[in-house]
Image (cartoon, rainbow, N blue to C red; front, side, top):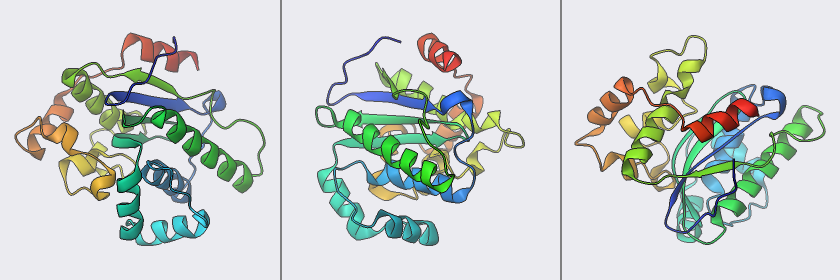
Length: 221
């Protein structure tokens, strides 16, 4: 996949997979750690005691309001949708400032890799190369990709037709109450539907697949 220029004001499908397609999210602590990172690292805010912040996040399963306000005021990207799978992830992200996505993903992937290698006594790369980003050209592609991402858990055993219960996806935040407040911009997608139920019907009946270029990349890695 050729390298693209990421421009402020545009949305992108950002994704990556683990080295050798190995599982890198083994339990709820791992998922919560990565979820914390993609939510909280939308701004350059530095967490002095990230371990404690994550523990509080895991325990309460809620955001620290003081952090939320500060992140929103300084963020360089906006998270629109996500799905964290056992060995890969998908995000829809809007670039707000030049090189915002690059800095965001560097922080997320570096922080999770350090956490993972320390916890599981590993060394080396956790993810298969740098992240990949594909420009979302229009609203049609945005909705199409959101459906693909939110249907991703269908790949997992026992999750077919239960995607709305998968807590490591933003699907339930788009069809029900948004758990993450303004740190997840679900309205970008929902404003194109009459109500949340209509979006749920759209996802359920979608046959969305990746673009050929995206599919080729994921197959190769």
